[in-house]
Image (cartoon, rainbow, N blue to C red):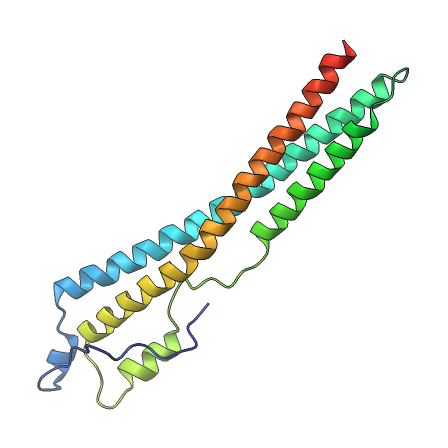
Length: 182
């Protein structure tokens, strides 16, 4: 999940003398910004994983609800399930399945930087760039990646909310069937 474009070179913090000591000097403010960017991306990865897990769990719950409704149809052999119940249950299950696929489908997430780009553009560059410069630009790119991912994550969260509403419809349909059977 690397970056294909080059790292930013604007506002570079260059070492004044180019000595090894200058290249390793760290400004704590840049280090703080870099660490904040890394934390954001790690938290975002966790959110993505949790959303995928919840979506598959919801699909399992919908499958159980449909199975229970099918069981009601088999148990009450004297009265078959109304067609609208069967159509509603299967339609909602298909929609929940599609929503789950949209959430779980592999998307292109930007969750890190390309190690080869870091080596080429900073460490092995001529002249080598300072650690502060590296941290600053990694923080800038980390935030850009977070923003890119956040737009997609918000859209997938809306899909998950729709999936939750569909499960409620499924369960309410089952309760209607139970109420009319008694």
